[in-house]
Amino acid sequence: MLNSLAAGRRLALRLVLWQLGVAAMAGFIFLIQGRRAALAALASALAVALGNALAGARAFSPGGAGQALARLILGTLLKWAVVFTGLYVILVRWQLPPAPAIAGLILAVLVNLFALRFKQ
Image (cartoon, rainbow, N blue to C red):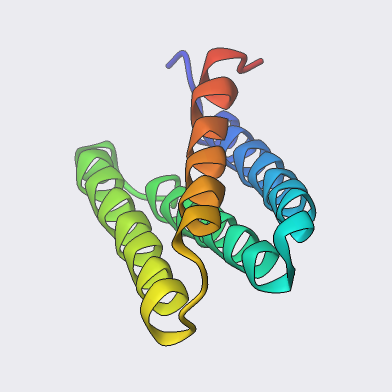
């Protein structure tokens, strides 16, 4: 096997840590527009990080090889459920500004591309 579960867990952890850093950076950048904008950017990026953390925990949990695809699909569905629920709470319940929320979400998702492109 070329890629072990441990390597996958390390990659998932690195991805989540980078997303947490981007979330903090997005919140700090949008602080220029006010606290509500900063909270919207921070919260949406944190929703993506939480979703990826749950997806990674689910996808790389111990189990047989036959269940690997099912765990991956379930983890991905769980991730997007968390992200969309987070966006609902941010935009509808808390009524935070949508542009910073979408920007924070996009920044956190872009981390996926860089983490997967530059994996070690």
